[in-house]
Amino acid sequence: MNFYPISILPKKIIFIDGISRSGKLFTGTLLSTFKNYEHLEFGLNFERLCPALEFKKINEDFAKSYINNYLNELIYNKYLSRNVNFRPTDRTGVVNTQNYKLYKKRLKMKEGDNIIKQIKKENKSLLFVTHDILTTIKAFNKLGLNYKMIEIFRNPFSLVMSWYKRGLGRRFGNDQRLFSLLIKKKNKISPWYDELFNDNIRNLNEIEKCIHYVYNLTTKSITDYSKLNKLEKNRIFITSYERLVENSYSEISKISIFLKSKLTKNTKIYIKKENIPKFLNSNIFNKNRLFIKSKVKKKYYNKLEKLELRFNQNIYGLSK
Image (cartoon, rainbow, N blue to C red):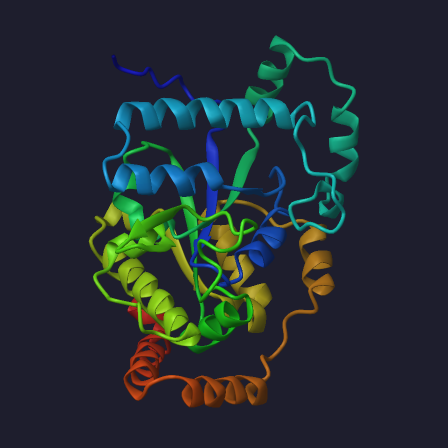
């Protein structure tokens, strides 16, 4: 049996991707102020399909059919404000968007073919925040989507500290509020991406595990990006959390040009609301660096330090 991938209604699909704690939601909030954009969504379906494709757990035609139907259903429901997040404390909540009144108005819309016609006429962009798609980019490209992606990196020391504070060195398999796909490997519960690596993490402490994940996910992202052809690379804009925070207007403007989108007056409002641009506190950064150094074996600190050197060289040499 072959699954049939129905044609996709939304023609403009944008992904804001990176490993956990790299600043994706913050960036998505800003980009959702662009002209003719729907409010951002978490791309959990993409995050879960890509590992399944990577490890050949599902068929390619099923994945295409599933994701095409998901995209059509998502935008149809958005035009009815069905399943839309109205929580004011969530970044994905439409209360925090320039189009809040529009989403309230859509609650009164009648469903039917008129909605399909409106979707096609307005041709709005869908915006997704995703984790770790670049680490499985070959599998992701099998979905056959016409997409653009903003890939966000962050200083590895800052990432490790953020992972540690978030408890990501101990929560996998122990916390039901952590919704990552899990695997059982050598009688240990791990996030799915541990299958991509061969390291034995059984005897690592909590921060060393964070270094393990950050280092391997980052280097896998770099390697897989380098294997893409020119057309595939042209779909991806490389940036960093640091650039977005310290050079906000410049970096957001570059992204708008890349996406062929226009900033709105709300873009400036939201940039001001985020209290950026600003210089990141070097004292806090150095304090965190010393803390990490005091808690891990020398080889893990050195590993992170070498990765940072590469990051400082124009974002691993990936940024134009």
